[in-house]
Image (cartoon, rainbow, N blue to C red):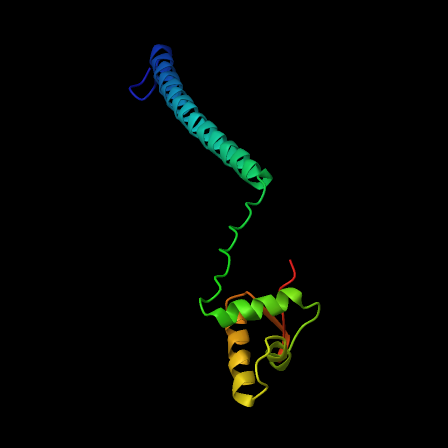
Length: 140
């Protein structure tokens, strides 16, 4: 045999070394796969929890909006008189008709004053203006 030739024993030793290297690499990869599998299982569990939470939230009934506080009538007695007129009325009224029902003189200044009060009541949500100059109580 020449110096460049390998003996059967040397070939077997090299094969054994290579086999051990491959086995070590395979074991390292198995450990890495186990780590990644555990990580993937954690992500799957978190995603499932999110799906369950979303489903639960979507099944909840919509909360009712809080009821607005009742509109407060201004303190002036004229507003109580106006509301008494609307309580007795069965149709929308104009400012002039409200003046007549309150036994107020039908003068432009009085009609305008009542109209301004009616507009304030509309702003507060106590009355509604169904069309320009025509006022009524809101329907429930």
